Image (cartoon, rainbow, N blue to C red; front, side, top):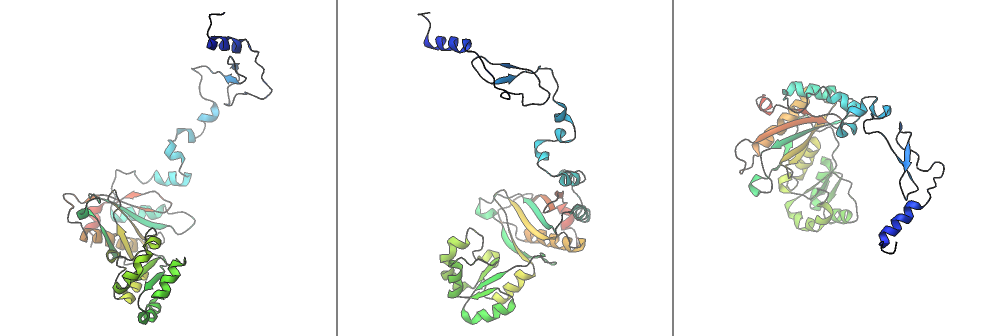
Length: 304
């Protein structure tokens, strides 16, 4: 015994210690497992099940056990709709795709319709970046609040055109004070030096005026009318995918087709100079709570 190491002595003492299990402690957690043994030196009962035994009945009943982890995170309504959209490998014509998307827009509110278009570009290069605007013929179905940063003599005309707020130094002071009750900020070129100090506030929200977005213009009256009439901005993300709002599920099929066609034509017209070879990869349309439907871009571009 004197030659035994300290670790061996402690192990021998633990094995000789009596095991006491309190009622309810160490009970089997899995249904269907009734037996258990105590591990040496422990007060917890370890359940033991045969290696060839089947899973408990509660784990195999129903369709949930046959779903993948990704499918389990979806609602039953979404899974039922997804089963009839033919997956991601089949391209549908414009009319069929829009009709199928509208058929599964059965949420309890008026869902927005989005277009997600993947392009063969790498935006990390300057000559392959894409950012522009497009006017949707049928509008967006949303109310857009436009604020105007302009000289005081143009403020009345901007408010008459529908701007929620317009002015110069007073508007800058309101924005610095936390008044962000607007969706778009339009500025005249001569006001941009004053607007530069608002970059920390407006930049993270995507509200900083930019000529590429059409929000820096001398004609603020026309800009307000365009944004309230359905003009939207689009840009390619880091993966070269363009995400654009193109209406509401309550729109007619013809109106949605016109909006989607206008978006595709605008992306084609603003093709970056560095984009070589095949420009379009894939295109999908979907509603807010519905599955996506793959769109045949070539057929859409051929539409009149």
